[in-house]
Length: 597
Image 1 (cartoon, rainbow, N blue to C red):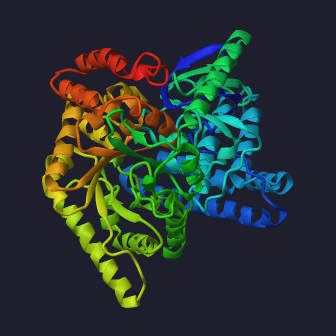
Image 2 (cartoon, helix red, strand yellow):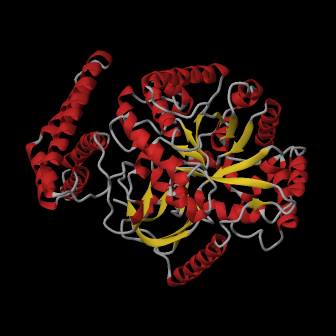
Image 3 (tube, helix red, strand yellow):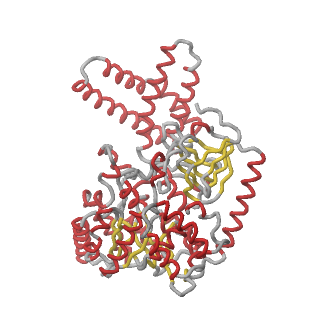
């Protein structure tokens, strides 16, 4: 049970998606599962109960497998006794009957029924004076946690919130976030995460204010508490006082007004005062986000993340399903550029259908992105076929994520050539040649950028992962989030190296990481020369266009040439704080990005 939230409590986190949300909190499951209530139709009740029983069987099988291993590795009766206790709990007819009755009577999904029944058990057990029986609640919770995990990782159900809320959680995985009914999400606040955590990235793509890295917020908030989430400053206020409510409501109105002013110029080109034009593209999560492109003035899609097709379901999406989604993207853009990134699965984005392979000790350093694709060639070919077929309907381009070696790029291109040949034999039309690019996201790819340029058409610098791998930090770990330093001399010099290598290799270079959507960082990127395309979360586009239209490219070059000579992040920070006001003027150097410098 969460502690009672203190009135007016302010917790400082990391701003992840701009805007201010005021509403009721909805605290997700304490075990960090995304357990949401969903109403099911009467004709779906028996299927839901069957799904529940399937999860029980899976949990029983897991316990049996663990018990067999325990007999070999941990001699003695105690481990087996504990596992037998958990197995007996899962077979308990009373527990099973109560969950079935809840599903039938309340018409709730099995996850919610299980959560509700467990809360009822907890209430009963805490009233028992005998310590032994109270301690048995821990066994019940452990067994139910296993069952809950198997339910959530079984065939997914779309989570529907009953009313608009602010989600509070320890963390939200990409799969959790993608299955939310975003029409009912006012804001997001998580204890975990840094500036580039996936919860923040997804929230930004959906125009939802978000603060991450709050560390202790969830333990002090209850469902139903009033929350203020300030995604611009990183502040979250629980149960605000009247004065706090009025203050933030006024701030929210100012933000809405300023945002409206920015949107009046979204159809203008991002052309500097000295006549150089930059293409401003959008990063989007799915074809469901296409409406955001016109709303914010995007000139195309610089990064179309395809993972959602794999994360939203327990089943691998087929070629036709993918083709229809990519074709929708191509046709919507009517000839404008759309770069489809092949799936970046693995790490914290392991698809539901592949979770059985087991956890990796260091998933960010393991089988993810292009490595995952090359290890699952059949799945990779299916996606490439779908992308190529969709290319016949628009300006589709292909991009491989997390290339670290020349051999990876060559192998991926070889598989692409095989798929092309198969389509030719089948008489299926596709765009040929089709532009193929790679994401530069690791120090290794920076160092061999010239060699990589000989085997692709363009680079897209993914600054989120590049900073993670270069600075040796976990980008979703709130405890080391302070080390996420885009202004580190090491990072800026790497960026300069890639941009130069792209120019020497005759390939285009763009930036699609978090830095691309920040006006200050973007000016540095443009100042390095060669970058004339930036791709960002749609809501960042209006401010970016206004910024670029307010500067001279010559000033950006001078600023960039100076920062690479400085030896510490603090020196760069102090220099930019002074120079950016001279370049942009006091009015434009506003609260929207003042904290970043």
